[in-house]
Image (tube, rainbow, N blue to C red; front, side, top):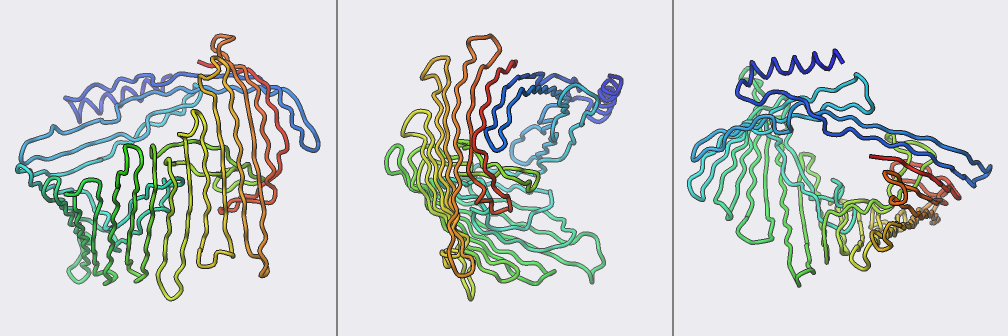
Amino acid sequence: MKKIVGIIAGLALVAGVAFADDPSVIPSVVSFSGKASIEYDIDLNDPAKMGIVNAEETEFKITFVPKDFKKSTEGDGLWGELVIKTGDQAHEKGIGSNYVIPAVSVDTAKIHFTDDDFYVVMNIKAPGLEVGGGKYSIATWSDNDKWANPKASVTLTNKAGFTLNFGLKDLVDFNLQYADNGVVVPDAKKIAFVFDASLKAVENLTLNAGVGYGTEKEKFVAAVKAEYKLGITDTLFIKPAVGFSLNEAEAKSLGVAVLFGWGKENQEPNFAKFKAANKVDDKDEWDNVVNKTADGVSVAANLALGDETTVELLISAYDSTLLDGLKLGAQMYVPNAAKFADKWIADAAVAWGSGDLLGDWKLSANFGLEVISAKVADKSETKTGFLWGCGIENGAIIDNTNLYIKYAGQAAKDIGSTKGHIGKDDNVTIKIGAQIHF
């Protein structure tokens, strides 16, 4: 407790000196929660095992300062914008003394000049010197840099500079990034720039093109990207996207994607995952159908253009509109469509939850399938894995308590993830339990 009081006193002293007009640093409890459960687990694998499992978890979170710690007042015409933000909040799982104080950093540092529809904004933080990029909106797996417009960057060691953003509101937008390698003797001076332009005059159209050059590598880079959302009806739409980049190694990349959609984008169905017999990146499971989904069907491809063009391909589909509580997903991933027979991976997933359909009783069920085909010694081998599960719970019989029965299993010893996970069989696991929570 003495540590906490000392930390708060120190923060208050700093705030009083550096930001005299700011609110005092007064800690507040964001979350003070916990849960405890008792289960009787039945594992019907060989050898069969069964027994009681106790579990408990607590969470105690304190916020010392708000997320937006300091913001300059918005001006009119010519004005400076500074936003200082805090990082992760002080946080301790359980009640103890290992508190982490949030770091404070400059989030935004810009000088604005506006005159009706014309604007000039100078960002005085070091520029990224990058063109292109931007994730595709596709039926599954859209929150991943793998499925995004290709990008390129200019190399500059110890870069320092600015970005000048200017244009006409709702018409065109330009960005000029300029940097050098800091304070050095003239003979060692290196510079770099990136310039890009975006058309904003057409509704639902994203069109951007950019070029860059640096004297460190003496190489040009370039990128162009376009995306358009064409509405067909109130719910149906088509969203095509295309991007191209040329990097400093003179490698050319082309990316294309098209989504035929009929509902929401950026959903998170959280389909059940396959359990692994090993850990990769500290994870002992891997995705079936990947999160960040959109109601629709899509095709996305990344092409590495050259003497031997490779085509990375993803075909996917997702729906949450067919039946209330039902989520359906499927995808096929091909590392190189030009050599389709060498390897491909197909996944399908189903999840259903009853919601309020049955009152206080909540039913759930899920199913997953993964098929991997790969060429081994000039012969294609196809391996399959399955997962399944269901459950029932009720939180109304006993106040603050969920009563539940969960059943799950998988047959996945023949498959694994692209990152190196090894699957395993888990024939049947039954969990009968009660969880008290608040």
